[in-house]
Image 1 (cartoon, rainbow, N blue to C red):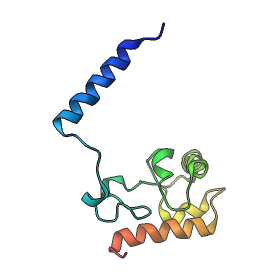
Image 2 (image 1 turned 120 degrees about the vertical axis):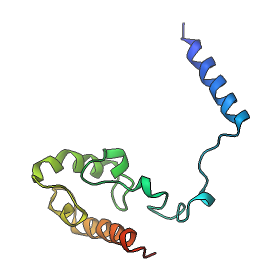
Image 3 (image 1 turned 180 degrees about the horizontal axis):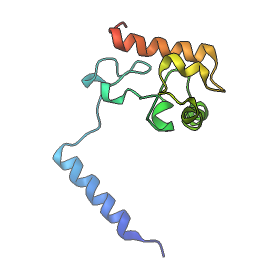
Length: 111
């Protein structure tokens, strides 16, 4: 028989959160949230350390390329930066330029 205790506990936690007014972040709270790559600054992926899920948020990088980045970056022997992204196998120059431009726009505040 299925362990129904977990379902009851989850339902209770969701009910408590709803009663207390907890909600998911909305697009209005964060400028640029609805734009590709937008959102709070703490969601900006770190190429040298983040996992494949967070790297898949980068423009032009999907789940497969993100996994390849995670697998290949230890072989670079230097920290991975947007400028070095094209050195990894499976990452084209166009994708590397798009990612570097996206990081540069964050750094300088261009939109």
